Length: 155
Image 1 (cartoon, one colour):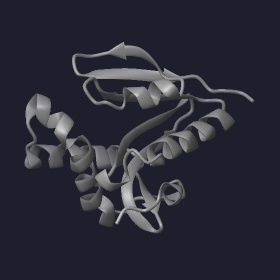
Image 2 (image 1 turned 90 degrees about the horizontal axis):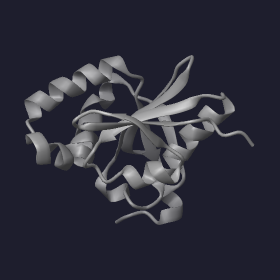
Image 3 (image 1 turned 90 degrees about the vertical axis):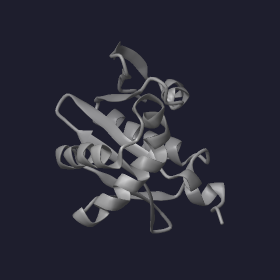
Image 4 (image 1 turned 45 degrees about the horizontal axis):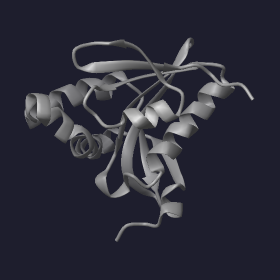
């Protein structure tokens, strides 16, 4: 049974631990696997190796709803910007406002810190409209990715 929309907006983040590695990989496979498969196919061994590198490089948080893990995000506050990534929400929790709520929470942190927010996504991932609605602009691109920036907003 799916929680009601209002329940989904009540999320918390906690720092990921080594015990979250498999959940994070499963959330990634669920969220972005179909988009990766379109271009390259999905090879669990290759993707697991890539995931392991990213797991070690970035600070990961687990998105919780009612204490249950429903996704991941990496919100990495650096001296010059906030890097937003590894944003994966599992199927049962998409299109209910949770992604927007997580993004707005990160943007609020960036705004309070007077930092721009940077992110990237696969060109054929339908997430573009979410980022455009929240002030992100494409600043560069590769064959496969768009790179976006959102300046800090001041009240």
